[in-house]
Amino acid sequence: MKFIYCNDTGREVSIHPATESHGVECDMATIKPLEERTFHLPENTYPWVKMWDYGEKHGLSLLVSAPKDED
Image (cartoon, rainbow, N blue to C red):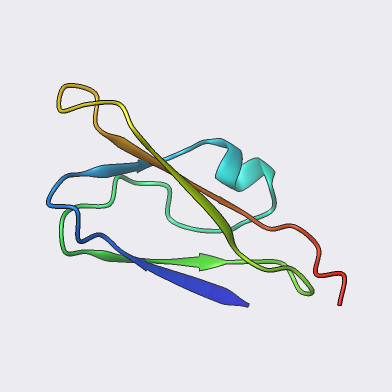
C-alpha cells in the first residue's frame, strides 16, 4: 500500500526517524513546500500519521507509521 503526503504547509517538513523503524519505506530527505512524498507501507497495514510543529526555528516533523489492519 502507498500513502502520498503533499506538503502544503509552506515550510520544510522533516521525516521522523521512527518512520523507517515502523516498516515504512520512503525517501527520508526533508520534504520541501509543495512537494509530494510517497510512503510505501507493508501489506495488511494502514497509514497512521502524526505531525509535530516545533516552531519556526525548529520546523515540522512528520511520522508515518504502519499498524496492522485487524479487519
